[in-house]
Each structure stands twice: as structure tokens, then as C-alpha cells.
Image (cartoon, rainbow, N blue to C red; front, side):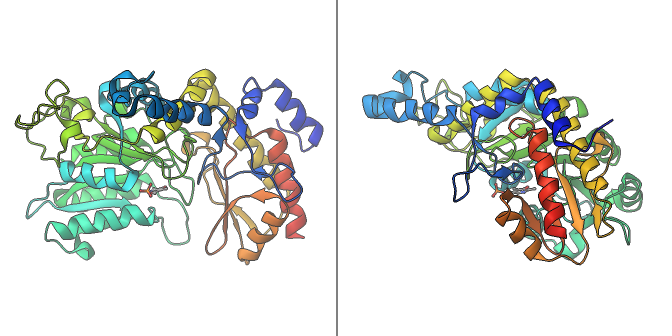
Length: 420
Ligand SMILES: *Cc1c(COP(=O)(O)O)cnc(C)c1O
């Protein structure tokens, strides 16, 4: 179905209804001013051209109004996060009341576990996928420890089998059959950062719930990449960052999902702050805490408006393009990457990521046996921005909003040169 030629790649770009969105982004350039081939949106998404205008608006209103900007700015700061809710809810498949932008990813993971990890003496274990992002593992271990348990006993890893790279659902079923009575939380990355494997969220949620466990997802590599349908898969909670596929800039604020069945559940303890308090009486500081209903009730602090302006700029691009279209293009574009890499016919190369489009987003993790980091250095010299994971994996993520079939073609050509 695909053809290995530049002319074919260019014709695919011409037919691509999203092709013009590439012009809405700023591309890093090399020493001679040439556009680099940027395939690293899984780590830090590119800057939309709109972003500086959106941030400038808030800087300008801050200079004009000072504190009055909270109510008088063109986009008043007090409810600013609400301007993001609808588009963000669409991207993760949630109801607006289930979603809030706040803090950053690991912080949100902790705040969610404060509410959703309430272990008892007999049911206290947490399952994560092995090769979970280190930050998630540290967070989970420290929560187990905080509650007086030993992570060596309390943390269960869902691992690929010996000699395999991907996790099998049957093995998670087995863990639940054997230890389900002791497991209280499944905390899984929707799309694994290392292998690029996307997990069956609905099946995992059902399985967890059958065993009386809470199920939460980390969408760091899922948000803006796959459609997690959080509400329908019935997840209890989820967290994500917005600087990877959601293009909102380094260290930008994170997102949080709490399923509506928990929106005012009095049994969920939480850490609180004034921003989670009833908006009507928030500034009358003598009231007892009165939690907002829904995900907003988990907010603590007034959030960074400059960061939210960047998120808003990016979400507006997503709205214009339409997430279904983005996903459709991703399937084609990543399929083309896979096709070309396989065409190399190089025995050293093994694509770890599943080849079924339903089990992956746009990233392919390409293992190059006996390679070391110099491969990555050479690719960088050849004008490709990619991402290296020890011991021998390059992660390549053609982001459908700004990468083209031609990008993918040139990348594989350069990879071929470097490998020879
Ligand atoms: C990127 C990423 C993080 C980073 O966490 P921050 O709190 O945003 O620094 C954490 N977990 C996963 C799975 C990631 O992919």
C-alpha cells in the first residue's frame, strides 16, 4: 500500500488534509539555518506560532490592569482554566466536569493517589507496568512507603515475558487472579514511554474493578496522541502533562481527570487548597472548606496564567484540526515510517512497538542491536532530532500536526546512511 520513494511521500503530503498545519509551528533550525527534521514530539512538542500572541495578551493585560486583570483582563484570570476545559475534555474523552488543568504531572499523580490510594492492612499493593517512567515508579513507591508498607512487597510490576519487549494482558490477568485480594490500585501508563505500546484501557479498568481495585492512568504519552476515552472506559482517575504531544511548552501545567462517579464522593480524602473551594465564597476566607464538585475540587493553587495561555493556544490548534483527523493521519504516517524502516531490511533493526495501530500512538521505538549512543549523535549531526534510550533504542515520533510524509522519508534515508 505504501511506496518507498520521495515522490510518493510528497504526493501523500499533497493529499493530506492536515498538511497546512505544519505552517502553524516553529521548527528548530541547524547551523546553516536549515529546518531540522523534528521527530521528538513525544518528549517536547513544537511551539505553535499562535503561542506568543496568546501569552503576549496576558502580559499586556497584566501591565494594563495589575491585579484587576483577575476580573478585567480580556480573558479574566480567575476563571481562566475554564477556557481550556472543553477542548481538553474532548482530547481525553471526558466530560468537562471531569477534567482540570493544574500543577504538573508527578504532582498530580501524588494528589490523585492521596485520594485513590487508601490502603488497608490486607489490601495495599499497587501494580504498574515495568519500564514505567521512572518518575511514576518513584511516586508510587513513595506513596507505599508513606503509608507504612515496604515497596519491595507492595509494588508489583507487570512485566514483558523473558525475551519479549511488550506486556501481555493475560499476564496482568494472572497477577490479578493470584494477588487481586491484596491489590488496591492499578496505575498504568496508557501508552508506554519506552516501547510505545498502548494498553487496552477498558479491559484493564474492567479487570481492576472486578478485583475491587481502583484504576488510574498516566496519559503523559497518551494525551494528544491516542484517544483514551477516559469516561467511557470508566477509569477512576488519570493524569497527564501538556508539553509532549500537546505542545504547550517546557514544564507547562498538567491535567487531571476524576470520573464523575467520584465527583463529590465524601469517602475520598484529599489534600486541599483555596482553589478547590466553592467559587462563590473563595475570597471570603473565613468559610470552612467547601469543595467544588468535579475535578476542579482537587485544585490547590491559583495556576500560572502564562502557562495556561500556551495550553490554550495549542488546544485551539487541536480544535481546528479535529482530533479524529489527527489520529487518522497518525495511523497513516506511523505506518509509513514502519514500512520504510522495514524496507531497510537490516538485521540489526527491530521495531519494539506493536505493529497493530490500535496498540500504539505515533511513536515507534526502534531497537538497533549492537548500536550505542553514537548512532544518535550521528543522526543529530545529520539534522534529525530524535530521542535515545539506553541501551539501544531510538524513539521516533512523527507528530501528525506538524510532521510530514517527506520528513519520515528523509529520516529513514539518513538513518540508512548512518547505519552504513
Ligand atoms: C514525561 C513523563 C513524566 C514527567 O513528569 P513531570 O512531572 O511532568 O516532570 C512522568 N511520567 C511519564 C510517564 C512521562 O512520560
